[in-house]
Amino acid sequence: MAQHTMEHEPKKAGPFQWIVVIIIPLIFALTLAIIILSFMGVNVIGKTKEFANHIPFLSNVVTTEEEKVEENKIELLENDIRTKDAEIDQLTAEVVTKDAEIDELNQEVTKITNQLKELETGKQEKADALSEVTTAFKGMEPEAAAPIISNLDTEMAASIVKSLPTKEKAALLGALDPELAASITNLLLE
Image (tube, rainbow, N blue to C red; front, side, top):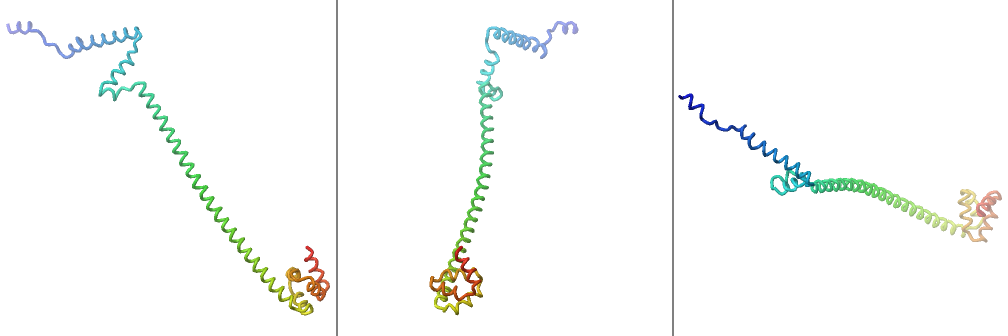
């Protein structure tokens, strides 16, 4: 009899039976509903994303088209920022280079200005010295000045003679050797 009672006891449903009985019909019903709604013109996938986006934990996982568009915009803007940063870096480098060139040119201008001042100072000193020498020759007799002028460089002699007044110039040229006087006269005419 013990065998007989075991055969009549109802068996308990296992987990596989629950899957077959509940989940498979549920999946079938959902699939059928999606197909029917799609034929009716309802955007099932879009509506599902919108609905899932309002559920707190699913909203982080599901992205809508608007979020994709926003992400694309953000990515484009970040690319623009990177491009602009690169341009800024390049322009900054150019500014540094141009500043260095400006400094170099300013130094060159300062150097040339100093050289010009030195030349002007030297020219003024030479003019002052020529004036002193000319004053000394003005006080000399032409016969005494002629040997000194003869020993000078022809151009220097012409500069001194040129600074003398006309009367003293004529007397000094007359006292000089005719060839030297002719050379000095040629330099005076230039």
